[in-house]
Structure formats: structure tokens, C-alpha cells
Image (tube, rainbow, N blue to C red; front, side, top):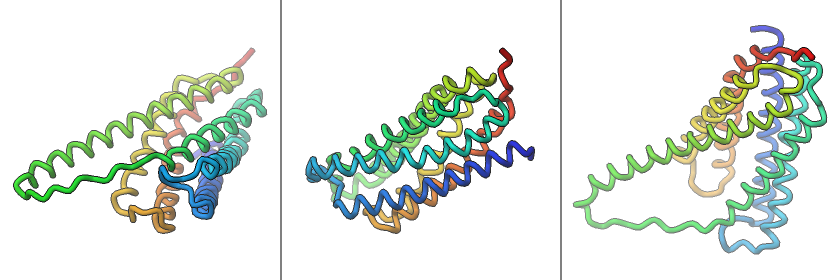
Length: 226
């Protein structure tokens, strides 16, 4: 592994630790405010969304700071302020948007007492979950491509190799999505600390997997010659 690749992995490791810390703080705030569910008062939702946006922005700022330092070793002309501002903006939007999902109403699953439908229901449930997994991974890939494209807008003035960067950003985010899938299946379904710890542990692993996926894109970057 080259020195640049090693520095990139270390930068992503620091970002993953910051992300886990942000997740636990976000959980503590959510529990303290008792935010969650359609019955949450609007004022509580607004406060939680604002705090969540700040936390996400701080987490992505750590990512931008350390990965930007690595990228500037390849492309010294990388606009530092724009790179940092981009991730701050993304963090605020993500934090605010994800916080609002906790106020979404959830329906109660129907109970089927007729055991004659059991085999069909199991098959339908399996196919339904497989479809949801496929759609979730596809959405993750699209989000990754969009984020990679935004990063490329900042990077393109300083470096070449943006096509690989966007494609591998989509792949890296899809890998993160796949890593997150087992969490709702094998961890407690309620909003407990155990569930949060499982989610943050899986997210940590997913971030590090994505960091390794991005290495080929990092290695293809070349400083743009004016």
C-alpha cells in the first residue's frame, strides 16, 4: 500500500470514529428530547432537526478536513474552503432530513391467523424483502453518485480522474448500504442503546469498507496542469 493510500485509510478511520461519536450524541439528544414518531410536537422536531444538522455537519467536516489534506498531496490546487463548505452543506441537509424521518407515522403490521396462507406469506415476505434490499442498494448507489458528482465539481479544477471518482463513489455508498442491511434484522427493533450501538458499529465497518473501495479512484487522480 502506497503512502497516499495509507494516509487515506487513516483519514477515513478518523472520520469513522467522528461519525460514531456523532451518532451516539445524536441518540442521546433524541432520547432527551423524546423525539420520534408522528406524535412528536413540531417544536421538538424542529429543535432536534437543527441539532442533528449541526452534528452531521460537524461529522462531515472532520471527513472533509482529513481527506482534503490527503487529496491536496495529490492535487495541491484543491480549493480547501470549497471542499469544506460542500461537506458542511451536505451534513446540514442530511442531518435535517434524516431527523424529520423520525416523525413519520408508522403503520401496524397486519396479523394473519389463517395458517393455510403461511407458505404463501413467507414466500411473499421473502420476495418483498429482496426487492426492498435491491431498491435500498440502488438508492444508495444513486446517492453516492450524486455526492461523488458534487465532490467532483470541487475537485475537477485541481485534478483529473473525475469519472472514476463518481463511479466508485456510487459503488462505495452501495457497499455501505449493504453493510447496514443486517442491522434491522439482528438487532432489537426498538430505539434502545443496543440498537444504536449495533447501527454505529455497522456504520463504522461500512465507512471503512467504502474507504478501501475508493482507493482505485484515489490512485487515478492526477494534478490538473493548467
